[in-house]
Length: 73
Length: 145
Picture 1 (cartoon, one colour):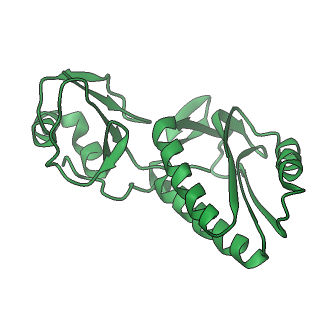
Picture 2: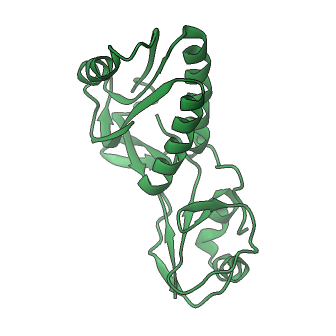
């Protein structure tokens, strides 16, 4: 299982999914209307490293987080 | 060093501690930036969420850049609520000469605003309202859209 967490203001409970890459995750989240805007403006990290490509294999125990727009300070 | 606190920062105490940590380190310059919550748009204050694992790695990368120039960066940030005229953020650079510290604090704070995984909310009527219009999408956002 891959755990998917939604950070900051995204009001969504974590998911546990049987997925093997980020393309599969994108497909699942795109079907959720409440995630539409967040998908457009959120960054993605796999095991706490930001990623720039969907072609990343996911394995059992991996953690994916979505990071919406930030504003520290 | 990165320091996270619950609620407002005790600015005089933190600046003094940092000064005392480095006063014998032979740095010629100590340049702090203090961010204070201003009264605007009828807010009562601000509130912050922080995602520490990525904040830590982001900060470590900047610390390495600083070390390469013979400098040190320190940063303090609040978690949770910070009310008007209190401070939520301090960044400081110590360096042998002032020019490095002045340039570094500018670059560091700009990247902090654009990349550090911290989310800001306005406190209005006791509620937290996400400050989307003042927020910046992290580079590479939209990967799953």
